[in-house]
Length: 151
Image 1 (cartoon, rainbow, N blue to C red):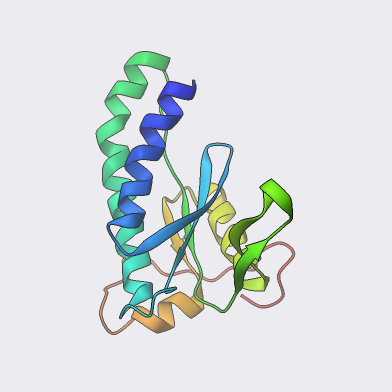
Image 2 (image 1 turned 60 degrees about the horizontal axis):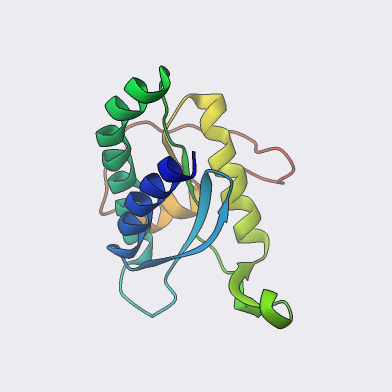
């Protein structure tokens, strides 16, 4: 299992880093990535491109995973654009660079909604507002996210 997860993360992290993002944290078979830390232009577009690259990488891995485990695997990506508090948090050897705040929680809720909609990539309205002039969105829906006020 560790071998497969490392193969998977190798591809997913490359998709993030190739698009000017950094991986903040790993949570089971998921991860949190942050974009826009180094003042590069168009961080939202980089985040969306990273998500699409991740889907391509997953598509490449699917036949192998199906052969090895006899079941289908897929990913769900949630993207939210907002402000977060970033910095070294913790103490001693456990101190690490991370991001915290409402934007991070909102992104997690957006990602979780992929299961409900049987989708691979979902973006928040704030993300859509940032990229709507440069990217055609195939499907658009509104929903309330559990534990979050607004849409």
